[in-house]
Length: 411
Ligand SMILES: Cc1ncc(COP(=O)(O)O)c(C=O)c1O
Image (tube, rainbow, N blue to C red; front, side, top):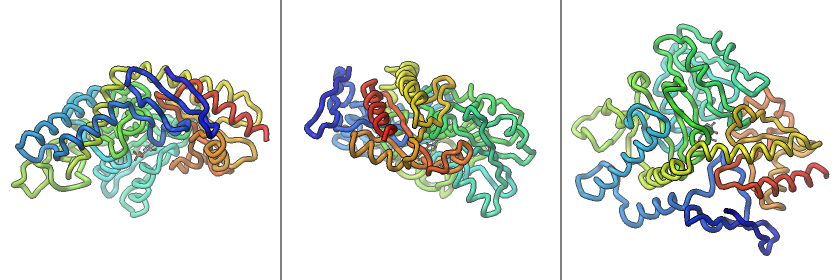
């Protein structure tokens, strides 16, 4: 249950009460930037991190003393919970990373070799585009970028035509962080590809928001942050890799694993193959609490809440003169992201006014996805205003936003 009241500065102050499950009181702002990182976190996440630093603090898997052993066991439980959530066959197919960018770099730079061809799309985030462009510009790979259709989805026919015998990797996002559209990844997963070609799905904007089953998607890698839809802390992420992907992946980072220390070579087995150096244990235990919260709430109910908020917002925005909606987020409800522009106002100005005068935090600009804006025509006004809702947003938040945008669009 959520109630709203005005605080002394005139901004809305929100108090959420729900059997201590959530933070009891949020700061005096409405947070609609959950695609950058989700906030607030479930109370249990904050408590798990505090408990780790107050009562444990050991490095996982580095000693036979009782606390490191206990901490290691807890970390492995989080790995199993994550594997269950995404339908992985074995928890050891999941490596912990430090964010979505880290996961994507481990896959891309661990697989691609001189002479390889890679395919990606114009929708992608810089955490995909920059490593791929770097490899292309340094002469290591050839790169093909696929366009999107009028529904804001990667053109699968164009992608199929681009596959050659040298294609070693196809990398596509599951949900666009600019448009909110769910991508046809199952279709791409089922395309005929050369035997060694690996399909990498960037799930940074999908997992936690919509159901994910890596086997049903037909992907070899699934890369994500832990701090967005999964509601874990910043500094967490993961990479799922199936057995054929693991075999073809050279570790990006080499170093200590707490295992086979007599060996000067990196262990070949997972998860140590891809996990070198101390893990962010406090963050992982926070992520574990978030996964428990999501499992209890269920992804289906999280998705249905988010869809309701997005539908309410689109019903307003799509019919309002002076507001241009770029998202076609209606395919299966999208995943909580809408992009728009207000006529004659730069997106950065809209975001500044929303923040300073209405206490509403959104994001403006290119959202680290520079290529898609040309395709949708939002490049002329320096990108879009992005609204991204999370599990703790309410109808009152959406109504406050629509009131504010109505005032801005009428200026
Ligand atoms: C689609 C997409 N991929 C990758 C990332 C990178 O994730 P991180 O910020 O955890 O590195 C983001 C972050 O916004 C994203 O939206």
